[in-house]
Amino acid sequence: MKKGILILFISISYFASAQVKKEADGKAIYNQYCLACHQEDGTGVPNLNPPLRKSDWVGGEKTRLIRVILEGLNEEIEVNGESYNRVMASHDFLSDKQVADVLTYIRTNFGNSAEPVKEEEVKVLRKKKP
Image (cartoon, rainbow, N blue to C red):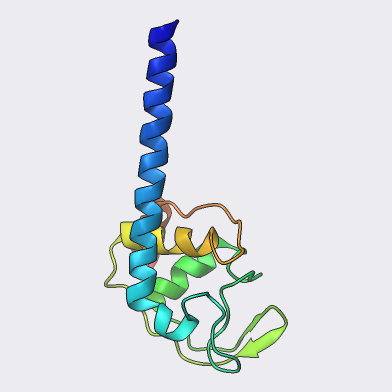
């Protein structure tokens, strides 16, 4: 019984450690590539760059967010009832893991509580990229 508890504890510790590392990696990518436009606290810049904080857009469809990172965005969008029409450059130079990590960070921080993005989901969409 003690051995089983020890194995369970080690497994939980490993999983928690992996999640902390993934969040740290996602935050580092955010700080490097996203912070200037979307701000440290994810509030964006009014009338220029949409907020990521408590965002219906961020909490929505994962596929849409992955495509924005891989393909950029050059069309008007509505976020939390406000319109934004500023170009976001493609970040397709990021690896599948980096895209998954930064989107997971955004979707689970800034008052958002959406499910994580998996590396495999990014890989599948990257292969379908026009």
